[in-house]
Image 1 (spheres, rainbow, N blue to C red):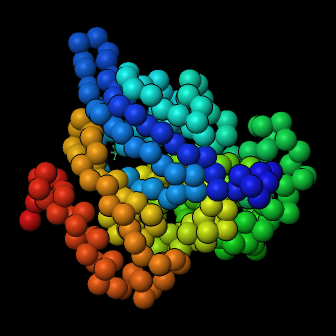
Image 2 (cartoon, rainbow, N blue to C red):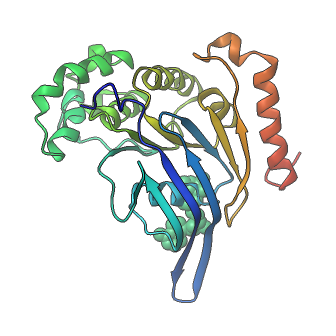
Length: 264
Ligand SMILES: Nc1ncnc2c1ncn2[C@@H]1O[C@H](COP(=O)(O)OP(=O)(O)OP(=O)(O)O)[C@@H](O)[C@H]1O
Ligand SMILES: [Mg+2]
């Protein structure tokens, strides 16, 4: 596990990044001119219209996709291949059907050649923190969609990655579960301070979670605005109900209206 000194996570430097997908004559300019520096321990949310390149950017940072141009560094090192010092959570939780909740979390350690027994207590603690304390020996088929996604999030965090990449992790959940997941994720982040890059379509979700919200343009995705979210944490019900919270949401909505992404 990481020690106290580097507990703030990895920094991310994205400089002049563009990506073009090409297959035969079909050319898609997914993202262009993306410059973004994320400080160690920061929570950054990306919002943007469907198809603007959010997942593409995340995959580039994870080293799963080679950018066409520009440069990406994680913790000061060039990303040249798949990163191991990260956690990734996707929209759909991919759990192993034949393993219970605890063992689905511990698979992360097995895949990394680490001793799962050493992480058992921490896995149980984190599962308790996201409301799965009584479900650690249940099988995935016995869980609701929200519970499965909670399990996937704990699996993404159990090895204490200094960088957590989340691609619409709550996208498939109902509104109520989504709200609870947002609260639980903030708790986990306050506890561990992983640098977090979180992609969402939800404007209020981005404002509620992030230190900074990156607003992207339609494809080819560029950064339209970067908005510092100066709200106290934890972002409890009073903070969410505050005038300042609504102003931030309004500011982002206006960016999308200006670009014709939202039309009334
Ligand atoms: N493997 C691929 N081959 C060709 N084109 C791709 C590939 N992956 C993504 N694209 C294209 O790149 C563009 C950006 O896709 P991406 O998945 O990054 O968007 P997104 O912002 O994550 O969208 P959504 O919000 O719907 O998830 C889209 O036009 C998509 O069709
Ligand atoms: Mg996507």
